[in-house]
Amino acid sequence: MLRYISRRLLSILLSLFLIITATFFLMRAAPGGPFSGEKKLPPEIEKNLNEYYGLDRPWYNQYFDYLVSIAKWDFGPSFKYKGQTVNDLINDGFPVSFFLGMESLLLAVSLGILLGVIAALNHNKWQDYGAMIFAVLGISVPSFIMASLLQYVLAIKLGLFPVARWESLQHTVLPALALAATPMAFIARLTRSSMLEVLSNDYIRTAKAKGLSKGQITVKHAIRNALLPVVTYLGPLSAAVLTGSFVIEKIFGIPGLGSQFVLSISNRDYTTIMGVTVFYSILLLFSVLLVDIAYGLIDPRIKLAGGKKGE
Image (cartoon, rainbow, N blue to C red; front, top):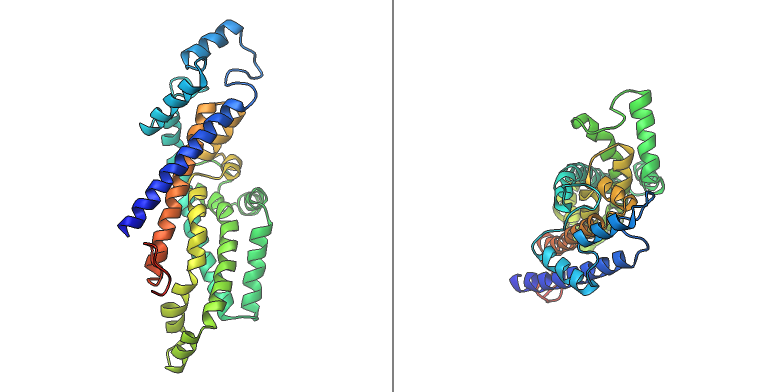
């Protein structure tokens, strides 16, 4: 286990190096600059700003300095927010996105697995058809449409929840539902197909022959083995929802990391774009590592240290 984790950490460091390098040079290759927007600055002021932020130095000096600052967990100053660094923006926005993401993730996982199990246990019955129709709708309807529908029906028409803003726990319900709809549908379909496959295995027939109840077979034998595809999906999903949904946060006026990223693009705030991209990549890579470790915990037959399944 330790040898496997060490190898994976080395691969994560290499992946991060490649991501940081690609992000740095893509930002430098983009047309325009952080101080060239709609309001054209006088050449003297733009020259002074470039000199102040070190943008007039050779690219290799800037690249080396950026690698050193990333190693120190310093993403640099924001070009558009005076007196604030990218670390400040992440520290302010990420807790909001994290809370919303955790709420959405819990909803997606719990309801998705529940719907998938119900559909599999009632294969080709009305419960199965109803759950899959719900899943298809969740996948087909874009998140911004789902958010608008929830606002119109539950907030404007019924008055059950606030329309937008981020002030209390009640304000989190609609954005969490909108953010959880698509992953919940995917999880429901994954759980259903995996459960159907597991329920057709010989050991399930043996458990039935021994007289175990349907509930015992489902909980102790079927669900655990059916969760592997769901766990695979949870890796990138966790990183995505925990860093914030750009569209959902914009619609509901949530001051999270996603909205900061959108503003940084429109403001040509290159350091913020690069910092948030690197931060998101770190979360994604470590989420995938946790998923691989969870594989071994869910199914002990899977060897993490390079062995083969079943050995």
